[in-house]
Amino acid sequence: MTGGMLLDIVLIVLLGSYAVSGFGQGLVVSVLSLVGFLGGGALGMAVLPGWFDGWAWAGEHPFESRALLIGGVFFLAALGQGIAVHFARRMRRHLHAGPIVAADAVLGGIASLIAVAVLVWFVAAGLRGSTASIVARTIGESRVLAVVDALVPPQTGALFAGFRQVLDRGGFPRVFEGLTTEPIIAVDPPSSAVLGGAGVVAAQASMVKVTGVAAACRRGQEGSGWVVAPGRVVTNAHVVAGIEDVTVRVRGTGPALHGSVVVFDPQRDLAVISVPGLNAPALPLGADLARGAEAVVAGFPLDGPLRLDAARVRQVINATGQDIYGQPGVTREIYSLLTRVEPGNSGGPLLSSAGQVVGVVFAKSLDDDQTGYALTLAEAAPVLTAAAGAQGRVDTGACSLG
Image 1 (cartoon, rainbow, N blue to C red):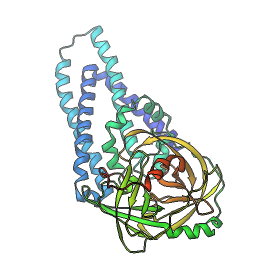
Image 2 (image 1 turned 90 degrees about the horizontal axis):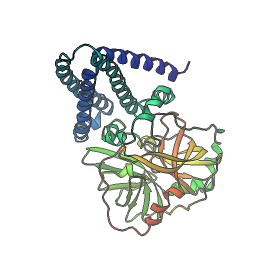
Image 3 (image 1 turned 180 degrees about the vertical axis):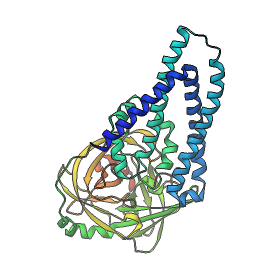
Image 4 (image 1 turned 90 degrees about the vertical axis):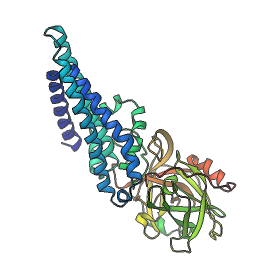
């Protein structure tokens, strides 16, 4: 029995028990209880994330701050529910026996079922992007959650974007919407020999570590980048979001050079940095890769030194997910890769075996530690085309996920 099946059993029992409870309470109590719970929770999700973004302690203690945020939202939800139930029970005393009471009981069971289903969806959506891959995979395997997720209006995700953004802090943008597991196709492991090619070795001279401080969120951010044109570096938008003064170091060890963001695309998750005095060659662009092709992921994972990881293309996907601020409905053409991707790899190049850039790394799988994602060159083309000619500093928006 899989983890998803066990979770389904628990959820069926939970949903059934709440439906029975709602039948006993009736429609008036159940509906007002639902309104109070959702109203209190919505208030928490609208107000609390803003407080956490401006709280230095939250940036220094991400796990504790996530737990505190969830607890705060549930406290306000429970408070709203308690107040609503108090008034609802007083109203129900005025109902008389007969068909009205029977209808009230049946509709109360339905309302309670909806209430707990929304609660379960809310918790699962938060945990899917902020916990270990085994938990995320278990949530993705649940058929009950898949049904609930399909019934929840797509606009609901936009309402909770700020809340989920805090839960996902330190991670990546969501590549796929929904709670179902990601489409991961098995391929043979890549050969480490691809790391030793002359072109791959030479390309390291054009890798940069990107760092900066997002003052509004009081936290440092770091990622990877690569030289696309003289004095121009490509990275992810979520790496530089909220940063005014960006610092780059060639190979991660060179002199600190200050740059400014001249292109910022939060939907694709790409940005271009203008770096005066950057003395590093631009990397050539390569051709699209097919399924099974070998490649190299280059970057500075976990704020460490430059690292190269062998990769193999699992498949090319048009994935509908979220932008860097958690807003849903963004479709990107991406490579699904058998490789290691960690925080810090964001913005690094996906190289062909000849050392040419064939994609831009931007995320990792929620379900599988050996799967990462890169934007294809076709997806990145509008930003790459604008890179050389872009001049003026642009707004880098609010602080983001990573």
